[in-house]
Length: 334
Image (cartoon, rainbow, N blue to C red):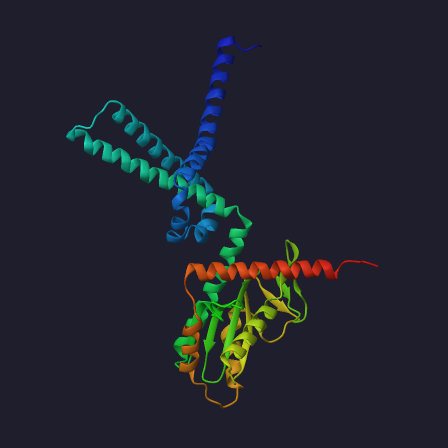
């Protein structure tokens, strides 16, 4: 039995209305996010730093429905605020009784636009693999830093610094720099600790240029972090003319991380305190004057964004040079 035309048209209207609602829910907040994100772009870097947007992007990536609703609410506030201001300006409503109304509209515009922009930026950070690698690295550094701080509270003779950038031969043509995730000075030794985030099983062969990594989702590689820590330890010992051991350590943190075929100074991050105590207990009885190390550190330490940018540029240039050399060395010319 065929359906009456009225039923068909009613069903079609319901279907069209549902489609319109779905498109409104999905795409209007996205469009407003791009628009407000462009409007507030000049303060994106500052807001990212102040609100830790990169660090919390992983959390919001899992709560995307809530993020989407907040982005839509922010976009709605921004749109209504702009329309209200435009209407009042077009009507020349600058009487004293309209000032409060304009101020409220301006507040809605700024607050809504900022909320919409923040949610839009978080979405971008959450889907950016490079940002997520950076966030994972910061998470590993924070985890190791917390363990080291706990060890420092248990050992009054420990001096500890985190995120240290050291610049040598500053202001000369041969200026160079090293970055240390964690620098620990005890009564007998100096430890240079490099932290990495990597999940799965890591084949940490000391002489390999790349370490093999295997996970339930597949296999991959990571750069030999021990070589980097060794180079930093060598620089510190030479530049500071130390006659005590400078021990390079690599602490790897991740999900179900396991180290295989690695030396004793490449460890799962959870075991870092045990390894440090083992090194310290077997060290010679010589006493290290920690105040001298601290003085050398503060003399060469740089904390400005310009110094960090220069360091990053030098690292990128060195990596490019190494890659070019690898291409040349692997070429078959005869």
